[in-house]
Image (cartoon, rainbow, N blue to C red; front, side, top):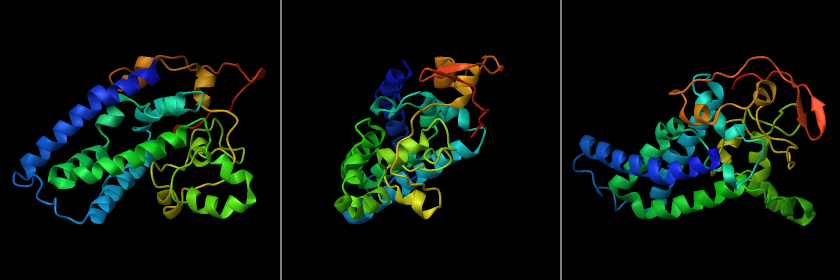
Length: 255
């Protein structure tokens, strides 16, 4: 349900609200600004999106894992006990509505960067969707020694399944999981530059949130519409069955 709702909200809610809202806001701030910068060189327009969209999203995502007040807006993306392209757009309504890079992208389109945005956004869709994909396309690069130099460049440039799966791992104490880093979306270079990158070329054995295994899965409408709805789940740890083995997880700190 959450996977489907997230896809629907991206298409029918977030897109229209932010595209119309950002244009209206930009027009109010700079009435003569519509298409005023359309003659900017294309390569500069592309860099503008990398900085004002992708880099800003890196810091927004990182903040969601750093500040306790923001984490409930983003936890739905990590609550899925599986990885795959289905969870690519899975996030709460207000996480997206407040995402600053979406509003900044709308402003760039307003001033005349719309054509470049089409190409940029298509590239970002392909990379971020593939980074969530269960196809694990990067494993081919790791299996063949002669491709390792190419793999070294790719995994430090863009997000890959290995680096992004690590961010969704159930644990971060197994030498693979790293949910306190690997925040990048299009360019993994941001994690490399800001010291939050971990590259293992391995994939976590399990995904999700330890707190859900301890306390039970959070209600779907709380995850989707927080803070309109607040949690009412119990606080007592409960034993769970994972991979046919009954285990007790240690509490996981809120990110």
